[in-house]
Length: 370
Ligand code: IPM
Ligand code: MG
Image (cartoon, rainbow, N blue to C red):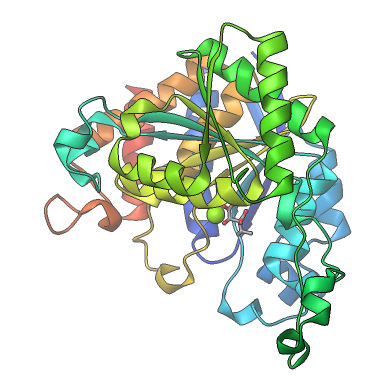
């Protein structure tokens, strides 16, 4: 029996409705295995801004600090997109949360659940080897956090650029930052098929040249048994879209990982299927779906709660060391899909019986109980 405290941050848009299902599933697991999970709700994102003027209230940070893990829904929406950057849900809450807790290792497994093979965006003959890629995205560095300063003489001196407004984002990577994500990637590869692909843009970017050098050195020195290759990000996108079966673990920087993980999710059938874990060095983590807050479908009971539910499974696995329980959730999700129930993004209501957000959650819960 374990006792854990979870900071619950539903956020905006579909966040609250999928979170409800995620918590239902966690509670069913707790009941079945005799664990106790205490949920501490906290405001984040646009809703926090509306209530108290800031998307990441101090109180929310404290709730997270006092918990064993953070269970996160989604943030953002058109309503807050034009606020000053530090007050937007993305730059004012989600990115600072990642930074405050040093959640540098973002694990994004892209797996096709057997019953969803028909929903995948690729032709079956391109998926003969299935799809089981683990994308490891560096999450607290790179262009997301390199404060922009327009100092390049090329830009400043060009008459053309001087004509209008200009600004910059700087892609910064340091040796220790690259090394620690390489370590996470090697550890993951060792538990899988020992194949690691590092993605960069070393033919153009200095930060990528350093990335490639450090990753190569690290693997050679510490994990010579890992089979490492390097791809430029444009080529990696093409390879993922045409022959995803060649990949095992992919390690890449913050922005490339953001883009490639959406691409990989489309191949699995829907971005509504992809969970993620963002971890720091001590194993503390934030668990959230890869998708966003989807304000256009919020409140309609049609959002797919599975990425949220599967993020809960990742929380059990990575922060609470409850592997069997995590697998139980994943198995239950697979069974429910196998029974044919689908939310709208997966063809529910057209090719398959339609399941609402809460029906999907309920079916996963029933499956765990039985
Ligand atoms: C993600 C999201 C975020 C990111 C946004 C919401 C800031 O797209 O987690 O992939 O770019 O990291
Ligand atoms: Mg993204």
